Each structure stands twice: as structure tokens, then as C-alpha cells.
Length: 152
Image (cartoon, rainbow, N blue to C red):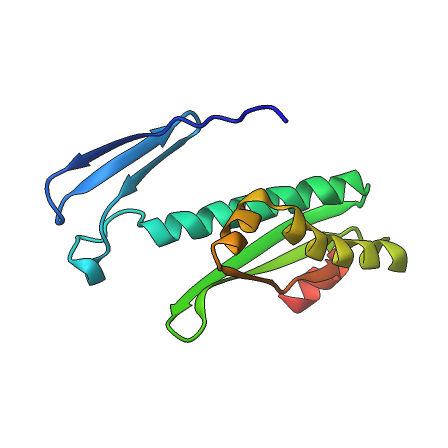
């Protein structure tokens, strides 16, 4: 396996009430300590960045796997929710909605449903987080393009 390297530059201005910037080749964002921890909260915070990474990895993995299965996907949306509690720990739930062309067969719908679950197992970021005891749940839905207009 080839080596993968990411360079990220971080600059911070001020104290806990300050803020900063992070940037990489194709990524740039403001960062700040959350208000609940004494900061200004006007920027991305660490948990949000972790959840964003998990969502990006999962959705990109899902898109690639759907394409590899030659499924005619006309749309994909996803919501992601993260919770952190003493009882359950850190938990991320992805809610992908895959929209197939109106002429998709029953086999293609079943394949898309299987792919929604398989993408979770193939997502590198998700797998790293699971090793750190983060629970990742997938609650996906597959619909046909004609059903989307009726259900929204």
C-alpha cells in the first residue's frame, strides 16, 4: 500500500476567546473553541471536524461503491447526527438517502440497500473511529426518482 500524507497548517490568534484558521490543499476553515468550553464558538470545533470527516468519507465511499455496481443513481443526500453521552459514549448516525432512476429494478434497489451498509465497512475514517470506540450507525433509505417528489 502506498503512503498517504496530509499537510495541514494551523494558525491561532489570541487566547481561548480567540480563533484560528486551518488549511490544506483543498480545505480551509475557521476554528474556534466552543462557547460551552469558554471560547467564542465562531468556527469549526474538534468534534464537528471529526463528524465532518466521517460523513465525507462515508458519502464518498458510498458514491464510489454505487458507481462500481453500475446503479443509476440520480441523487444522494445525507444527514449526519452525532451525540456524546456518558452512558453511550460518542455516537455518529448517518442517514443516507439514495435516489435511483424511476426504472430501477427490485434487484437494483436491493443492491443499493446492501451498498449503504457495505460502505460503512469500507470507510477508512469510520473504521479508525470505531477502533477508538465511536459507535457508527447507518439508517439509509433507497427510493425511486418518481417517489421523491411525492414524499418531500
